Picture 1 (cartoon, rainbow, N blue to C red):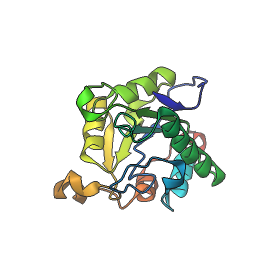
Picture 2 (cartoon, one colour; picture 1 turned 180 degrees about the horizontal axis):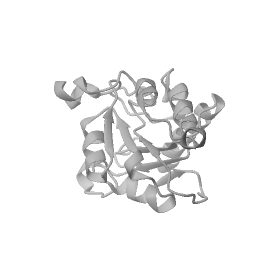
Picture 3 (spheres, rainbow, N blue to C red; picture 1 turned 90 degrees about the horizontal axis):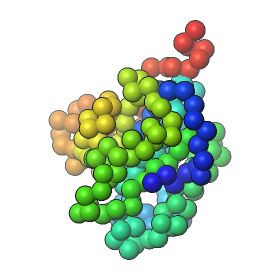
Amino acid sequence: MRAWPKRIKPGPAAPTAFLDRDGTLNRDSKAYVTSPAALKIYAFAAKAVALLNRKGYRVVVLTNQSGVARGYMTLARSRAINLKLVRELRRSGAVIDAVYFCPHGPGEGCPCRKPAPGLVKEALKDNPADLKRSFMAGDKRSDLDFARRAGLKGNLVLTGQWRSAGAAAAKRGYKDLLALARALPDYSERKMK
């Protein structure tokens, strides 16, 4: 389900940074983020997203939000949280191109709930991605499993719940999203010429 924007103007296939939200862009506590006031964006997030923008990546957030199915928040509240993320990052010069979320619970068998690849399929219907130059970044094993199932390179960031990914995965992870953004190739038009 797309949380933002209401309409997307399709563009050409582009390198796309598919990003998990909780634990990757904002703090992930043991409690659900159930209100815009509870969303605490990491200090490095705006710099990381702005760097991805400058390097020519389309930036798309893909997030499971089972708090909706569990009754902790409404669909409208979940959208409001995602809109706050987009607005706060934009104020700092960082552009999120789209946000997609799955409001279903783990036991519902929803094809859009990560690690199933439904969210990326929905995003690709709106805007094609150059999958060879695209990636998924997240802080959980399910984000890496999602990347594999979607045919994307998976990148672990060592923020949020990274410990659940295991010690072997942590050895190949990045300190945070900014460290990953710095390590990625530049696909901006000026570099491509």
